[in-house]
Image (cartoon, rainbow, N blue to C red; front, side, top):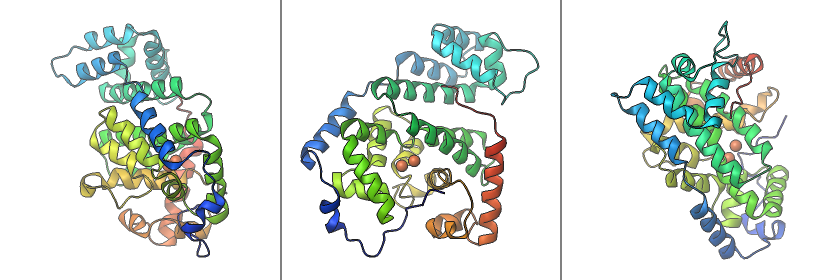
Length: 307
Ligand SMILES: [Fe+2]
Ligand SMILES: [Fe+2]
């Protein structure tokens, strides 16, 4: 099992960080490169935003939406792939965009478009980051299932999925700029049991969650999504906490649990007590029950890597 690293080990002082982590470039230069990189990340492609606008317009016809989808071959292929995935258990293959949209629904289509747009931009700019995306797909699955414990609103489950999938986009920026530094930060996090985001903040001045938050703001994502990305390691900090507490807590918990491979009784101690209380998981029994259920759903779930 991957060791969780939410707490700071007692024998470690942040002043010692400079001994463990040597920046290849001065801090100010790294921060400047990070801001440059964020500025240069392309916007979500226009056609994606155009279709999302059509979806929220009640006057739009399904045929007009599917015509727009069909203008992009990659998008068409993705929408058909989702409709034909094991999630929808259709008897016959879905071979038209119209049928695919009717099957998956407009809300799901809108989420798919947002994730396709974001992932397309990030993968075109930052290659070879498969391990981050693998973790992110798992986190998306866990976020969606965790939020369902408290909410029956389909839209919230959709947002939780996107938030889980995109929660670590800031890491892509850091890894592209200073892979060695990030490697050292990760190693230090494992040996000293300090969260990666805390070390990043100390060593760089910005952590990957804050970088991801800036990218999501640049893309004009909904505030709840921006906050879920920005506070997935610090669930107490979002400014409009009440509105986004459920989403932020879900992504926070999903991010921790999706890295584990088996239950241990110590696991509960690694999770923020307020988040446990929020989900009524503050007894070992309730926590284990939730963990087992979540893992079971994960094991039997069909693969959902559609992008
Ligand atoms: Fe993270
Ligand atoms: Fe993560």
